[in-house]
Structures are given as C-alpha cells and as structure tokens.
Length: 473
Image 1 (tube, rainbow, N blue to C red):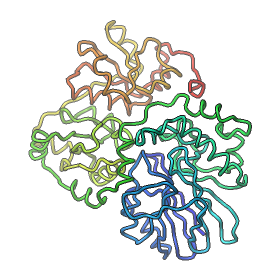
Image 2: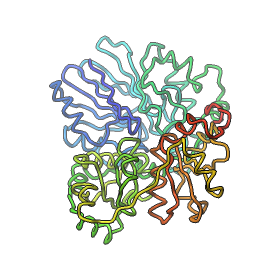
Image 3: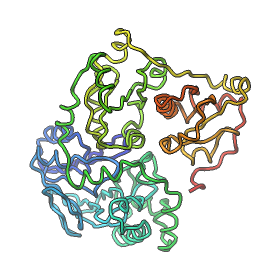
Image 4: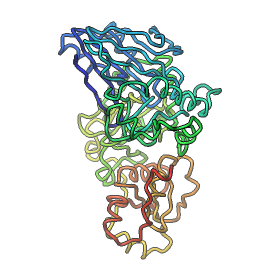
C-alpha cells in the first residue's frame, strides 16, 4: 500500500493518492488531473475511484475530468446530489481498492454531504482517516459555507451537526489513527489550522480545541463560530461548479492559448471588458507595468487572491506573465473557476516596452526612510492593508487599516488628494492594493518595501503592544 499526500501551497490543499495491488484511488483531486494519471501509470495501477469528501468551495475539483480520462467512478457521501454520473455512497459503505478498504463515514457539519474515508490496510487494521474539511490539524471546518448555497442551513444548525459528527463518528476511533485533512494553514476553510498537514487522532484529541472531551454542544457552537470572517465571494460559485459540472481543463487551456503581440494585446484590452492581470513579483511590477493592469503575483497565494479581488468568476482575463509561465497561470486560475482567460502578452513586458507602448510605475520607499517621509508631509497617511486580525494583533500607532480583502467596498474611504504610504506584512498584498487603486485613478500611492516586518525592524515608528491573534477570535 502506498499513501501519498499531494499538497498545493497556493491553496493550502491536500489531495491524496493511494495505491494497492494495481488499483488506486484519488481523494479530492485538483482540476489538473494529468499528474494523478501519470502517478498511477508509474505504479502500473488503474485508478478505480475518485473520492470527494464534499462539494468544495475554495477550488474546482478535478473529479469529472479524472473520471472521464480514466474510467474511475466518482464517489460522494450520503445526501450529495451531483449533476453528473457519480455514486452516492451510503454511510458505512465499504470500497475495496486492491487489498485495502475505505469505509465511508458520513460526517455532516461543514456541509451536509461531508464525509470522511476510513482506511484499513491489507490486514484489516484501521490506519488512517481522510477527513476533508470535517477535521483539520488544530481546527475543524467552518460551518457557514453551505448556508451560502442552501438558505435554510444556518451556521448554528451546521455547527450542531458537526459537533455530533465529530463525537459520534471520529472521536471514538483509535488514537494511533493518522488524520489526513484536505487543508492546512492558509486556507479560508477554517480559522486556526496548523502548519502541520498530518497528525495522529490521539494528538488532536489532546490539542485541538474543538475536540475537548468535556465540551458541550453549546460551547462548541460558540467557539467555532466566533471570529468567522466572510468567505471569499467566489466560494459559492466554485460549489456550484463542483455540483453541476464544468468545462474540461483542456478546453480552458486551449481558449487561453493566444499569444498576442503588443498591438493585438492593446486592442484586446481596449475592445473587451477583460481585466489585465500582471503576475510578476511585486517589486518588478512596480518599476514598469501596463497602465490599468493589476498585480497579483504568481509566487504567492495567487488563486485565492484572484477569487477575492475579481468578483465575477466569468470575467474575461488578459495576462502579463514571466516567460514560459503562461500555462501555469491559466491552470491556477482554473483551479478556482476563472476559466475565461482570452490571451497573454507575447514576450511579456519587455516586448511591450520595445514596442514603445506606455508604461506606468508605483513609487516605493524603504522602511527606514518611512518616518522621514511621513514627517515631511503631515497630511500623508500610513495605510495598513493586512487583515483586521493582523492589525488588531500588532500595528504602527496611527496607521489606518483597510484590509485588501475588502478593497472593493472601501474606495470611498481613500482621498485621491492625499498621499498614502501603503504596507502589508511583507509586500505581496500592498502591491495588489496599490495596483487596483492606480487602475481606478488613485495616483498618490507609495509602497513600503518589506511591509510591517521591515517597519518593525527599523524601529523608527512606534508599534502597538502585541496581542496573540488567537485571543481575538
């Protein structure tokens, strides 16, 4: 038996490949399915099942393409109503894969169809459990996402279901069982996940706040619903794609495969409603970029930020990327359902500049020069675009907070006549913020290089006393 966790940092997501005696199963696959197929071919194995723990909200799963390309059977837990051919398993149903067995455990709470898969090895010993978004390392799945799709499901009701599922189905299992969750730290599907991506169930019973033995249902509901921030707007859209079906990733890649020279790219930008996304690193983008393009760096949490900042999942997109990274960017857009990339700038920004096209730039300032710059312009504002919880935990005294997550709701708070020195934690988010405002006609924006970390290290500005973020939930 082989168990392989295939972890994708951009989404903080774990898919799983399990092989036994020539048969394999893939759990919660990403949309690009060729790596799973190649992995099975390497083992000389046939993929028998594609197991889904639930209808995912934070990414579009690859279950449909993987099933079509391999002949595998898609499996969901009880109550699921997929809009395509799939097996809806009953609670307790056993699925044989080679010499091993996976038992379906229906664990409603994160969503109503949420299910875990209990793995028994060749000797029939329970060795692991694939918990999806029901149980994470250090946390449990948030209970407010399904209500965005089914109105009568309140987070209160879902949390109560989750309490019962954890106590009745998971906590009675053996302490040496390995927990394999669908997400780790950085995912918006929970609020307090560990950076670890596996653990024993025994450790989780000891250290996971939501699994306390003497916890009442009322305490559980109160604690797991406290401090929940609104989920990204694309989550319900991804759920519906996972339920109803979607275009093949091959079709998406083919539609995007249009290398446009600068003149054609400019014409496409002017003649369509396409958003221009520049995926280069923030500090490189700042030096020269196409006017009205926005920066969302590929070397970061790219896909979730696209989903957060671009409200319409069907928005047409034009790309400016580093050389030979076009397909990677299109694939990562498709992971969260943004399937309508219509082309990319051939030759990148260098070709644009050589063609004599106009470029824009964003001024940057070193953190150790920030204090002097603020003193020279008393009307200037230091703007912190980190999450509210980060700001509340620790911030520069006097700084204003407008989280990047909610930029589309707060343009009216920003005065075009004032100068803003903008920072996040390290520079990734602040450049996104600046580029979006720049595209909307805000010109007095200066990026603080290195973000809050560099500001704090410079010791030139007073910082508030640190408060542990977990105490703010």
